[in-house]
Amino acid sequence: MTGPCLLVVDDDPHITTLLRIALGRNGYEIRESHSGREALNMARRRPPDAVLLDLHMPDMSGVDLLRCMGTEPRLRRVPVIVATGEADPPELPTAFATLTKPFKLRILCSTIRDAIEQRAEVG
Image (cartoon, rainbow, N blue to C red; front, side, top):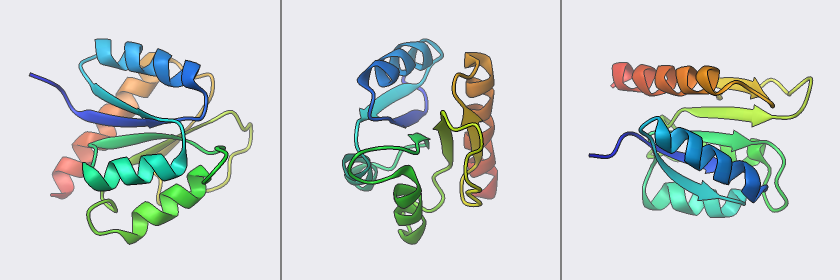
């Protein structure tokens, strides 16, 4: 049995690989994307239970991806956790949480779990 599905979006394949391994060991099914446009298409085909999103990507920023997801009925309730290296990230009211890289795996897992549980409670 597979756990909740996470879409990990980061233009650095080293980061997505590390997260796939670490989060996979914590019971999550991981799908990886290295661009905003690809992530949006993946989410449209099969909405994930949550998204872990980097802000800076070459083709579509994380902010733009978050905005697009918010306009689509099938995606607007998918919780998005922003992961950024920015010391002072922008305010993103539609994001579930913002984590600054580097972050601790236990904090990330706890945040993901909370996001998925809150989504389930909302219905």
